[in-house]
Image 1 (tube, helix red, strand yellow):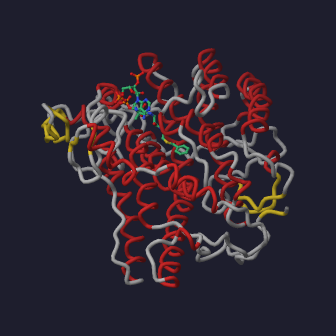
Image 2 (cartoon, helix red, strand yellow):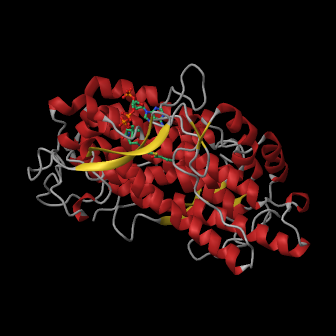
Image 3 (cartoon, helix red, strand yellow):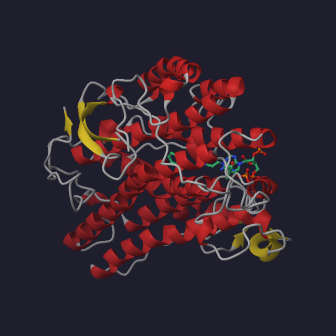
Length: 471
Ligand code: BYC
């Protein structure tokens, strides 16, 4: 496995040097990317040394090299997982045929759309998180934030490479637009809903990395099955980095739960707010919000778009190869939950149309694992409270539930009942003010803010009081 040449302007394992036209296109995009990073990347800290992981090759040894780097000097490279010899398309009407190394003309616009939607989320998340460095609860957390940010930047590079290498002029235009849209902007917002929401505090960041990055895991896994091999291989490598982002979410929320239980016991109260903590009820409201905007990211319960993507061999299912069926789904059906005539019902639909819902099912099951783990912490502390994923119809903006009011327990209610209970279900202004009041920066190595417990271990075998960012 070749080590990436770090003297090159754009480190890569795609033989960029052999393709002068492509190299020039990417080199001309690079300054625009750096300008965007300067304007929209992490605010402050750009001149500081951060203990970061950088990919130097895609092998098991080389993809995680740790050292101090200043963020603007991070080498955003283009890395595809190693090709699988004689790989064939695993599903849809082209099943069994060799994978494509070039974009098939008839699937060009669908593929471009999928790549653009994926690419758009990456800079969006960096924009959403850009102010969080100011209020990091520890140096360890600050470093993790920056690790995520540089890697989301690299994931943008990954999609821009595909656009430049395979979509000609249109691809170059799309790559420019990826740097022009802005999270939350009224005139030129990011494409998907969750990526226009605020991430104003670290509780939101942990929820985002638990729930929204996990959508990334499932979407990338579905694209990693693609018959368009460069997309599949790109996503396979991105998934390795994605695991760390979800780890930050899982352990971040776990540490908040831990600290809350300590404060509850110490002060013999559920109301830990006055003691500098985040109550379990408040945590549940944040969870309800982030879960609901994240399950919206899977699209409608039934979708002809997704049926077309699947049949064409562009986007598969999570762990497609492990599924014991015909991988064409032309005659199978599936039950989906829908709102019909004012009721929540199960309807049988063609399985092909229900693939978004199928991916959402896999996602929901995975989300539950962390929730169960946090509940174990509560049980072990003798606390009679369970965190829960709300019903999937709760607070939805996309699909069958949009425009309906569904309680976290799954009951359809009218506007009045919804309004009367909203402050129990979603973060209130008071909650947000309280969480904001806790966000005080802690920059002394090894020290933690009072609302969160320390992590179980440091990064890459380093101790907790290691100077993860040299301030
Ligand atoms: N917000 O036919 P439908 C990540 C649109 S996260 C706004 O049901 P489809 C990351 C939809 O585009 C992973 N609009 O949708 C995480 C369609 O519009 P058009 C990102 C939405 O096409 C953290 C219309 O509504 N990757 O990597 O079946 C940090 C009809 O909908 C939304 C991908 O998403 C929404 N939530 O499925 C950093 C993979 N949902 O076409 C990174 C690529 C739907 O009528 N994308 N719409 O104009 C896809 O596979 C699909 O585009 C979607 C939508 C699953 C998103």
